[in-house]
Structures are given as C-alpha cells and as structure tokens.
Picture 1: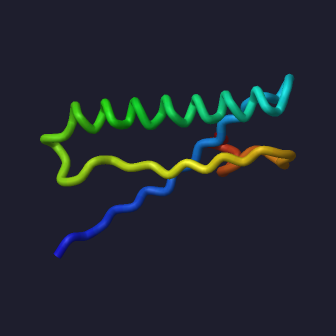
Picture 2: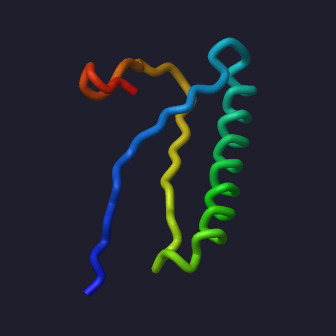
Picture 3: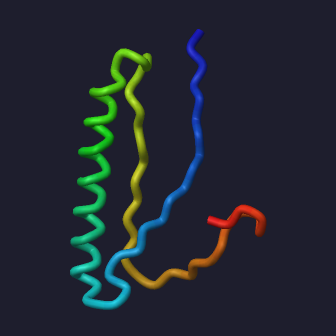
Length: 77
C-alpha cells in the first residue's frame, strides 16, 4: 500500500505591478520556467533519497486581484 503525502503550501509572486501587464505576464512565464528547471535539478540531486520526484502545481493569473496578509498574526506570510 502506497500512502500519498500532500503538503499544501502556497506562494504568490506578483509581476508587472509598476508597468505593462504584458511584460508582467512574460515575466511570470519566465519565473515559472525557472521554477520548473530548478525543480528538475533538485530532483536529479536527491533522486536516490525519494521514491518519487517532487512535483509542484503552478497557476498564472493576469488581471486585478485583492491580496492581503494570510495566516495567524503571530506568523504572517
């Protein structure tokens, strides 16, 4: 029996706040490509330590958003 461990940790990166939204969208795509590349490198380094490679999910949104502090006040993000 294989048990799956799913850790839900979130990260939000904001691109293009002070400029052209198209430039921000391109920066977001480049940031995504960089994260995936570095994850592949990490998985290669620690391959012998894990049964399966680490995986991530990435979503990109372009437009207005309401953002704020998350988590309890004693440990804000």
